[in-house]
Image (cartoon, rainbow over all chains, first blue to last red; front, side, top):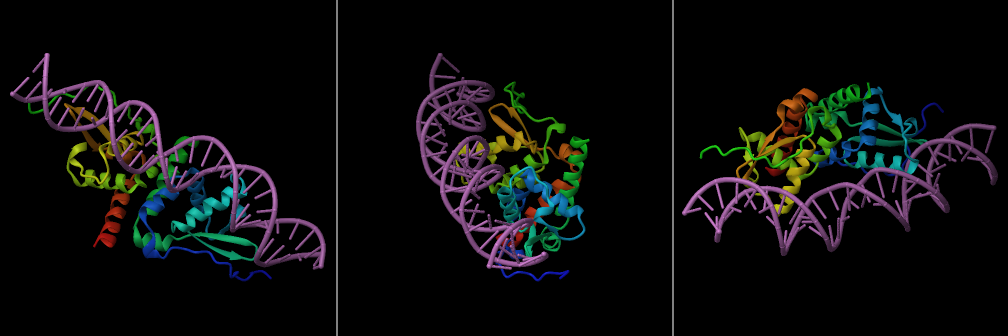
Length: 116
Length: 116
DNA sequence: GCCGTACTACGATGCCTATCGTACGAGTCG
DNA sequence: CGACTCGTACGATAGGCATCGTAGTACGGC
């Protein structure tokens, strides 16, 4: 099968109205999570957790993805054994217009400045 | 005297190049500190620490101002017994164009949405 | 010099969190 | 079914941090 079904395993997400700016900022204040979000923004669609090659164990990776989901930054859905991740661009743009772009731009500038 | 001299007590600030996005986001992810920054942005110039009426003790207030200063969000200077606080708008705008405005706008929208 | 105000320094406390390792569950493929 | 992959759950650990209270320092005015 080329497109496996979405599993029924539950993955609680906050509604758009429940997303709090402080939680979003806290989620993005961790370098590992900021890196994940930047990769998600660079990729066109959804990315699986295992696509990311982070310098931490899988347990810790799971933890970071959960923080991002529970803060409302990303949306996660099971597709077979993989868990696909996507930025909640529309919800964030509706709540905080221009914020996500400004944050991604800021992260990109800093990476360019520090990383070479 | 109407304009007391700036004291020599040392208050270390990060240089513009040393300001890290993660630190700024972490600083603003605390409700008390976000509130301080919003008040600073609303006021035209510098504000003294004692101008703020926060629901925490003065010890904790000192702590929050230090986090904001050490992350590069505000600049602090002694003027007599008072310590004046000002947003580092220029430095932040130079490093992360549009970010501060987007953050303040987001905070304002959320306050309007939740606070009435 | 003495007092009051503004802020700080330090220690304590309790909570949160980033990290790990191991054991487990869900799904796919042979 | 059995093996393998992907991701989770749980416990442990170590460090960070928001908060407080008390004691202390710096400055300005009397």
